[in-house]
Every structure is written in C-alpha cells, then in structure tokens.
Amino acid sequence: MHYRDGQYFELSFRQFFFYFIFSLTLDALGNALSVSTNLGSAPWTAGAANLSKLTGFPIALFLGLTTVLVATANIFFSGKLNWKRFFGNILFGVLFSLMVGIFNGWLAVLHLNQLPIYEKIIIDIAGLATVGVGISIYQRVNVILHPIDDLTNILRFSYFKGSAPKAQMSNFIVAIFISLICWLLSGTVVALNIGTAFAFICQGSIIAWSDRHVFPALVHGNMEQSHKDIPQQS
Image (cartoon, rainbow, N blue to C red):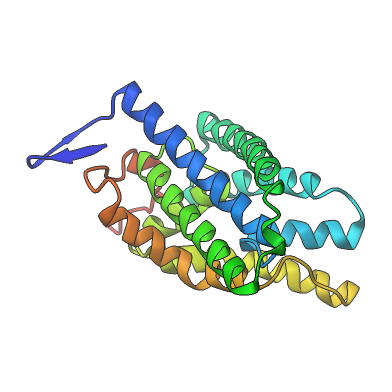
C-alpha cells in the first residue's frame, strides 16, 4: 500500500511485481554474501546447518522442513487459516532457496572467504543489513513472504505493538535454541559467528529503519493478515 498526499492507495500489479522481485533479490543476495564469508549466517540458516551436521542429512532438507513448519506455526499465531497465504509462504521459500543458490554460485568465483578478516566482516555485515532492507520491503507489501519473515510480521503487530526488534529477536530465539541443542548433542556447532550475533541484535532495528527510510511511501498493507483476532472484552 502507498501513502501519499494524506491518502492510501492499493499497489498496482506492476508496483507489487517490482517491490516483490527487488526485495526478494536483496534478501537472497544478502544471505549469499553472508554465507560466502563463512562468518556466521542468520539464525534460522545456522539452525538448519547444525541439524545437518548432527544428522548427516543435507541442509536443504532442514531448510525445507523449516519452511513448512513455520508456515504452519503462522496459522496458529495469526489465528487464521489462509491456504493462499500458506502456499504463498512455501512458494517464497522455494524461490528464495533457488536464488540464494544462484548468487552463491556467482560469488564462489570471487573466493570471498579468502579475504582478510576485516574485509570479510564488512561484507558479512553488509550482506545481513541488505537482508534486513529486503525483509522490510516485502513485509510492507505483505502479500507473499518467506514464512519466517511472515512470522516476524505477525509477532510484531499482534504481540509486540509494532516493535520490529522485539519481534525479530523473539523469532530468532527459537533458531538459536535449535543450534544450542545440536551443540549439546554433538559437542560441535557450525554457522554461528559474528554474523549470527549481528543478525540477532541488529536486524530488527534495520527493518524498522528501512520502514522509515527505504521507499517511505510504501506502508504495511493487508494488515488483517498479520493480526491475530483477539476477542473484545464485554
């Protein structure tokens, strides 16, 4: 939804398509940059990596399971059974995974993990900040989202009075807990590093900043899908 001259306007299909593709690209590119430095991934990716390390099954399996399980959890937290939104979550997860793979292939030839540590830290943080900007854009469009980011949207507006940092950190706590359980069972942990800490502490604030400064005329639409129906007190 756009807000200009004191009025709200629904997005046209062309506007929706632009914002969706642009934000999905930012999200996938940012994740690929963080992965290429090997300095820590976002918490949910790290959780999947640790489950893969613990069990020996491919990380793609756990990323796929995460997509389905979180999309299902969103039905519970929003209090709404919306099949269109559920399958939209799954579709976004598939497109996101494909694009991350493409960007990873392109970045592999640059050998970013061989750069000096301070350069890798800059690239890792820049990548995770780019993820936050992308999330902000498609959360405001609020039509098709990655289920993890859809969960953040639901928590933000239904449980945390619009606070993106609180919602994002609450979301990430579960993912961090998964990695810790894997560490207790195996004695080793992977994909947790400075980038994970940065995402946990700062990504919610980056989303909130982007809401105000990146395409500021774009405001949260379809809000009825991100709010839990709470019965009114009589």
